[in-house]
Length: 474
Ligand SMILES: Nc1nc2c(ncn2[C@@H]2O[C@H](COP(=O)(O)OP(=O)(O)O)[C@@H](O)[C@H]2O)c(=O)[nH]1
Ligand SMILES: [Mg+2]
Image 1 (tube, helix red, strand yellow):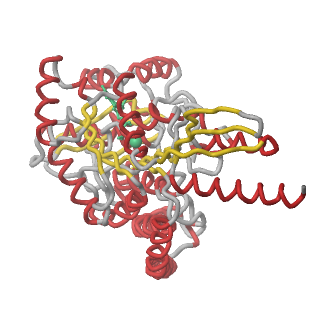
Image 2: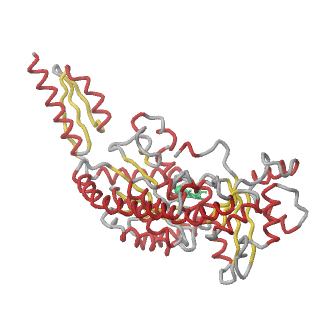
Image 3: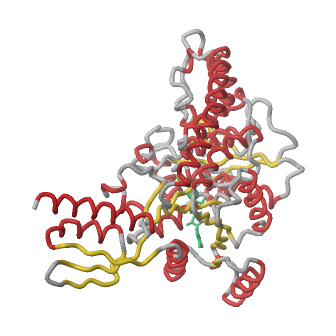
């Protein structure tokens, strides 16, 4: 997953048509979300181009004039048209700096301003194709962006299969469109979203796609049974401390994850080399060791066909011992978002997992007085909630302490004795337990330890075995 991110991020421009029944606020929220989703995919969003229309243009989504304007923006041409001054203003600083460079050598593909156009609707294959040709670069519509995010987040075989079904359903008509344009030899769109659903696109005809979808559906049905037994086994097994972050996209899940786990720090650590990139251990290390995972975020206006694959990727939250439900407290629609998230979690059967509501971004809620007011209100409504800002170190510390307190409730204290001949096991003690006290006498060392009951008894078994061996050899 890490390898997919390029050295310098690809630059994206967000394009959207505002239909008459969409209010300015709704429109802006949706654009914001798409920018966030673009960022999640590793794009740098350098501009936004919008247009009010009574309907999407059937040929190319945007009207002819806007498509030309878009082309000029993509190629980084100098723009005398005052309507584009606002466009440049909306571009981010680095984007604007790049645009300046691009002006000096316009139309040069090396210096052009934009690599991909993100369209804030699901558009038809031919609209995408035309926009791609006229816009002069790759086009990803909203559905394709979301599919790509789901694809990256799907870890369990069932989730992967579910996402692949959605991708095949989406890609099918688009492959036909591409084949029609390219002629019999076929061509391949270079788009990010096209990867993985089957590389030899031109060879996949309708029939094959249908067969593959059926096959995947059968696999999912079979996996369902297996998953239930696996889960039962895991629940019976040693209680790993696992936390899953859930909530709407842009709530701050990844930011909290980074703050709590020190992100890159552990990638190189051998202990965690086998863990998925989205699963990290709390850092600095704790007893018990707490593993965190980031889940795919909830999205407004999720295309209907993607609901199943979304729930499937989220299902992994059920395996967690604790859910951190992150809510953007500064979002005017946060109460509805919170209710939707809770409802979906219940639907997938995650209601049995303990949950802490984390109201984030409190720093964005007015002045300190307003923040205190909102906090008091939230605490009244959700007595065990946390109200914080991922930007404040002190708050991160509190969250960390809360997590540890949750998992330490079940810890037990115990005493173990290591004979001098067994001192090679000393390391294991410090790795697995919190050592409260240590004292030595003639025969060896006493440790007063705190740890998970299963770990303590496992260590005792190991100790007994070593002792037996030592006794029989002497
Ligand atoms: N002001 C402020 N910004 C935040 C806070 N937490 C996250 N952000 C920003 O909100 C945006 C979305 O955060 P991200 O962690 O990617 O959200 P995710 O989609 O839930 O993973 C990023 O630009 C963050 O820098 C916070 O507490 N305060
Ligand atoms: Mg995220």
